[in-house]
Length: 349
Image (tube, rainbow, N blue to C red; front, side, top):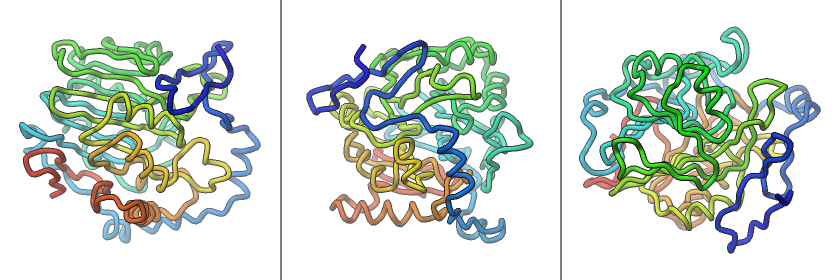
């Protein structure tokens, strides 16, 4: 397999590179962050996040108690969703309920004693979640794949729950106690057991994976397409900007709703090959042909040095500058239950 793939418009199915047991991004310019990169980022770059105390956060970035009546009785039309925080989001549509990248722990870390800690709490517990059919995992980083949350979900739902994961992740999932695990590479598809009109597809992102210094890129990373008979959902997970998003839009778009990351992008010189900035997030919205997009990967853990609310204004400005419909790419409070694409088109109340 060639080391570099052509990312032109004619290349509709760019595949990951697997070499010597490790996956690599197929797009030019990417390199995995080195120890020196991480050291410089942590020690020498200025932290401009300016996250205030809890009292101020409660006013500016409130956490709502989810409307469980809505969650337990999803609407017939449209996609109903709950933003739990960071990249964790629950979507309900076309008779299926899917949870993406569930992290309910206090810290996204190998230990609950050290590592990035929530500055906004989860709006609900695993025990309070409604019926679930499936969970999708984008990659193995701790802020997207949390052992304690996986164990809690298994305890609550057992074998009724199906897990969709990128290639190489199945072993970790089964060792964590998951029985129904579907492992896919980019562009591979699977129909959900018992709901054959629901299709899951693993799709490209530009990122990387690891859970220790010894397993870097031994598992694949990706985004997820979930298509039903009436609606479709796109979950980006975590990514830098790449040509893969145009390919996803051409093959699977348009989408009723997309969940797109907007945070953890500064300093750009360190993070531009790993995370999108707000303007690139809006470009993804256009690339995948999303009718509506909700911002994720922000407002929960401090993972980079940009001002913690800056992404909201930059997304708004990018939407306006591109001449897009106001409100097509929106932000919600943690815990907010909202509906898009239904009879009322967009209900954020």
